[in-house]
Image (tube, rainbow, N blue to C red):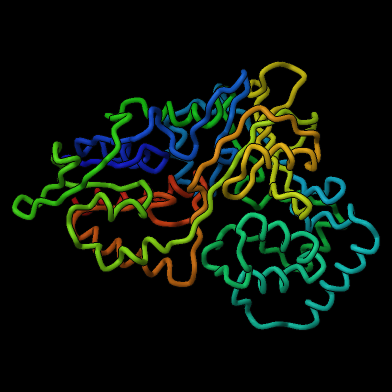
Amino acid sequence: MKKIAIIGCGISGMTAAHRLKNHYEVELFEKDSKPGGLIKCDLVDGNLYHMVGGHVFNSKRQDVLDWFWKFFDREAEFTLSTRNAVAFMGKPIGYPIENHLYQMNDITINNVINDLLDLSLNKNDEPKNFEEFLKKKFGNTLYEEYFKPYNEKIWKKDLTKVPLSWLEGKLPMPKIEEIFYNNIKKEKETKMVHSTFFYPKNNGSQFLADRLAEGLHINLNEGVESLSRNSDTNKWMINSQKEFDMVIFSGNIKFLPSILENDFLDEYQESIEALDFHGTTSVLCEIDINDYSWIYLPDISFDAHRIICTGNFSKKNNSKEGILSATIEFTDFISIEDIHQQLKKIPFTPKYIDHRYTKYTYPIQDTTTRELISKIKKITEEKELYLTGRFAEWEYYNMDAAIGAALDLTRTMNSEN
């Protein structure tokens, strides 16, 4: 059997490992003490803590669904929930916001109606960036009151500089007549991939990571410090000790040039270093009892952009009956002193339990990013070094999209070898 090393034991690396382990000898390297990458969870004072996001599962790709459910008992181990998200704008407004205009005040309703009628009568050119898309899809009122402040909180970026290609598949695409119809009929949104979602009854997304880790050869607490290509044998060496025929890199591409002891990415090093990103400070809190799943926060009087009510995903996520745990997310680093000041302003009376800062959570693309990554992948794949994963490919993947990308890669690898 040929030997494959997989660097990174997140959802992408473990998906690839399972897909290849019957045809190759596969070994994973993970610098952390447990598997999971961005989907890892901790237990804090009896509350399950999603340190980055609130990871749930569903997919529109049948191959992803088929692959995923081979590892789990859907009926016994998961609950199926309907997404109950709101935007808090002085009061909770149903999400997606354009379907819940009837919950807004009369002035806003009239302004949005006029915006939408103007848009229907004046056909505009195709939008060239994120700001133009939002204005041409929803009008100026919704843009100014919700979409602009909310997205600027997350991305901390001029929305005219955000390319639409980066957010492809994640943007709402309702027609104007659908917005009116959904408000008149008070229809629920069912087209989004996570309008319904599966969530483990116990231990959240760490349960997913731990189950997927079973049956794999994983070296925990073993980061990769060096990766070298022997030109004589065409083999890869991990940390100058272990030899492999192929390598899958599912870590952060920013760290790849520093561990490569060959020079074939040198001309791209400066471009890789310039790739833009954001981190997340997530704050585990106890909050007022509610029945929401996500609460979006466009209010510019505080910096947090959303509350993820993970305690509602499973009652076992809470330390005891009668309390509700949640994570409140801030883009990039925020100090403990600022956290406590911010919590005083945020709705639902959050009470601090713990917090973590994760430096890399959101890769941000510009108009040249995909071309850059494509060139790099072409070079590395010629040397049997493959990239997959959110930060390896610099793509804004959800969990199911990361699984899908790993399935696509391994399908190609199996056919080629």
